[in-house]
Length: 121
Image (cartoon, rainbow, N blue to C red; front, side):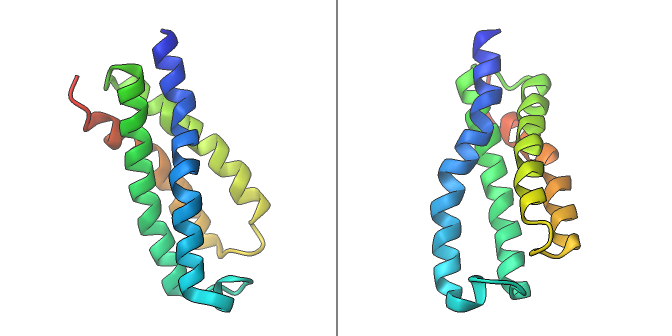
């Protein structure tokens, strides 16, 4: 049970560890256009695609840490991502289009669950 909880907690940590440097690199490619809203649509779409990758890694990493790929692990890790993601999105609600927030938040749980399922038990 302890490893399961640790895996769930690890998912948002893994997300942050990999997403921050990659998103900073993406922003640097866009220069001033990514410094303040309105952000280019291409930048937002690339960020969403990258978020899918982060979710897969977070789910897989959570399953690896927990030592299982049970659905409850993937679901718990996805919910943990959603809770943290909601906090971040609320702080940026006015600066990013609503469509982006909806797509981003809607994909967190299923992508994380899929990432966890990729780990062989």
